[in-house]
Length: 265
Image (tube, rainbow, N blue to C red; front, side, top):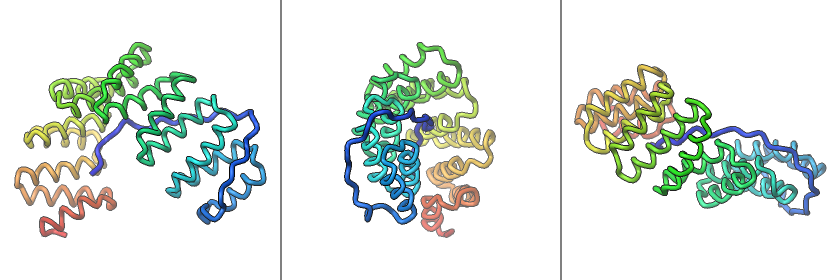
């Protein structure tokens, strides 16, 4: 099951001002659900609002390559637009293109180094085990923006330390994150992962239960609780937690597979 990342930040795009150079797109590639909107964009190519709306629809339909192509059309018109580069970076990250995402975040940060774009970059660097994550987090912490951003910075530092095997520092960072935001579910989960990965199931169970106490409908915590009980060879408890996870979120395929593996499918 996918591990956790810092929550995605929402950014409102600024208006474009320059004329767009002609960009050819084959309408046959556009999903039917977006075809009418695409036709409106073709009719009114200078409408930034329409093109952003098309990007969002294509994103929701999973057509990320087409959405990114539309973002490139916007960039042709306004290459110094912070919001456009930020949006492109988020789409690239969602598409799994980390290199393009980092490049786009960097473009956005050079235009306007907002804390959100710096943390988005830091999060990707943390997963890549690149210590640029720590430098960017320090930069954001120096802005003194309050507990919310301190929590984000501590979480990302914890991810970096966890990925690089500095587990004591990782746990300290996750604790610092939680002290600034006790409802920061991702920090509880990452802390539990550390204990799970180091074969300390009792400590992992305690952490996942803490997460459940704070948010009783948090399906992922029940799923990982099941995995941890399975690690302990406690089959009945594992089955129970996997079943609870599926009640809360029937889409967790890994829980379904686990129940089948344990003979409770």
